[in-house]
Image (cartoon, rainbow, N blue to C red; front, side, top):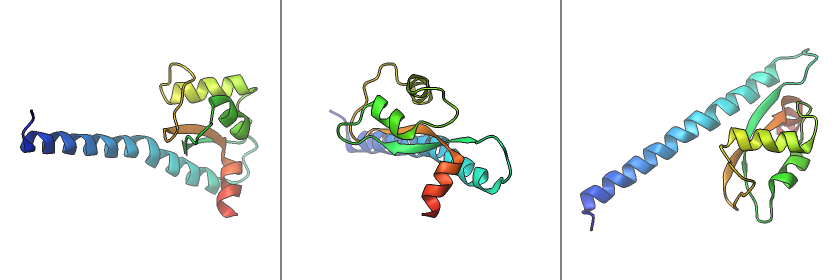
Length: 114
């Protein structure tokens, strides 16, 4: 049985790890999205990564079809990138899971401004 002091230290370590992951994955993504929005006149559409919370019934295929961007030639290549970016080894995702997905910067900027 763990003492209260040990439980507290374990809890603190978990909180620090979650915050570190947030700043590693989410903060740079938001910075990329805003930076991409300030660059005008680029012929090629930039791809940025945004966070997505998996909803009940979601599959990687559904997410890919709803968010497919110009960088990827087909749904399967988009799914492979989502799996690579999130270190997912099979196509199993779970409700509430936080993943990052690629989107066209122009699409993201249009969604934010509406």
